[in-house]
Structure formats: structure tokens, C-alpha cells
Length: 312
Image 1 (tube, helix red, strand yellow):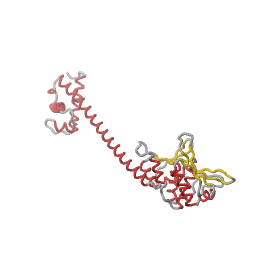
Image 2 (cartoon, one colour):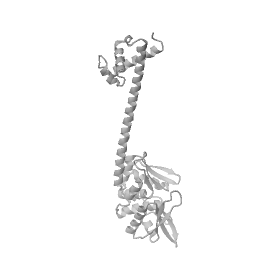
Image 3 (cartoon, one colour):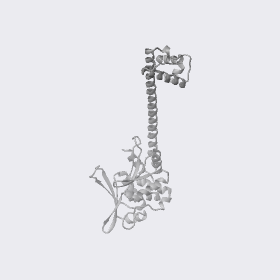
Image 4 (cartoon, helix red, strand yellow):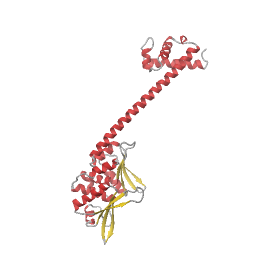
């Protein structure tokens, strides 16, 4: 089972108050519902590829409206050949739609009632329904954090983003080929959203994985940084030793200033140590790191001039 499926499974097990159930149904039907005519009456069809979501819609409609819709299963023939669960409501279909404020007498309306936007519990429930209907979230173990909710209509998509941003989630919207999405990219905001819609266990799992993953990434960065520093030290030491040997072979280290000669001999004896450690090992030390660096730089300059024939 995917992480997104785990989240939705948790959400479908929540117990909700009537008004909150209505807000959840409002989102589910607005996103996944369609209307048809049968014997001069409107018929409501609400579909989902997730059987738990279809069962929840059936239970909510039965509990709060006394409706026993008909559940059927179809096999999708395009793309992923998943089962499609369809809840068909004939009796009281328009009554339900009118009560949910998503029917204008002809079709399902796009926009969410302003009254709902002023009620915290109902906003949370609406977002839960929207996520159940068309939401997805990446597994937190993957390299990219991403949560999104799809909507066919731009105005509805904008309202979903508005609801999310009431809770400072930094939701953004974008157009897709066949509709629009509201999405979150920040891990902390995704965790906040999961908590907001009632997926507490999923949120805790998300956070546990994220913390371990972020800690692992931090350790890797530190190791890489340390390795880079070690390589830098090794390369610098190798160049220093090469220059010191050049000087020794051509004119001898005794020709150097005594302070430079001391550092040169110490570097030959301890090729693997850092500048700070070298300063503690040099004869007549200790010498500061900057002091050692200054003397080695002069040795390198001397070797460079010697190699170019500027010093006889």
C-alpha cells in the first residue's frame, strides 16, 4: 500500500459530526461527482478508485441523509486498469445537492459557499474531502516532498488554496493539462496539512521518516565536507613536499632561511598532518596555523622561482 493510500485509509476511519460530514461530502461530490437524467429525475454518480472512500461516501449519505445508494464496480480500460467504484444515488439526489449548496438546479457549482470558509472545523473537513477525492502525497522516503489536490475548475482550485493558506501552508496553484492543482512542497507544511485534516498517525509517520532522512542527509553532508577538507589538505601537503624536495635536490634546505628550513624539514617528516598540527611539531614551536601557512607559502614561492631559473 502506498503512503498516500495509508493516509486515505486513516481518514476514512474518522468519526465526524453532521456539519463536518456535510463539508466533507461537499468536496467529494464537487470533485468526483457527476449528474445524469433518468426518468426526468437527476441521478448523482460519485466515483472513486479507492473502495474505502466509496464506502465512506455511502456510509455518510446513509447516516446523515437516510439514503441507500447503489454501489457498483467497473474496470477502467484506459491507462491503469484499476477498479472504479461508483456510488449511484437516485432517490433524494437533488435534495442532498441542495442541502450541500453545490447544485444550481442544472449542474454542480464550482465555488464553495462563503459561510463554510468562516468555520474552522468545516474548512478542515472540506480539505479532508478534497484530499480523499483527488489528493496525493509522495512517500516521505523519496527525494522530493510533494502533496497536491486536483480540481477540474480553476475557481475551485483557487478556493482550496485559499483554505489551505488560512493555516499558513504556503499552498500554490498551477495548471495541468486537464485541470488545476493546489500543491505543497515544504515537508513541514505537508505534515501540518496532514494534521489539519485529521491524519495524525500518518503525520507522525511522515515526521519520523523525515527526521531520520534529514539527519542522514546532514551526516552525509558533514562526511562529504570532511572528505573534501581532507583531500584539500592532502593535495596541499603533496604540493608542499614536492616543492621542498625540489629545493633540497637543487640547492639543499640549508640554503633556506632557518625558519623556513625548520618548517620544510617538519613537513617532510610529517606529510599527513594539518597546518595546525604541523605548527605544534616544528622545531622551536609551537607556531600558529597562520604562521605555518605563511612560511609554507614562502617555500612554495621559492621553489617556483627556482624551477623557473630565477634563483641560481
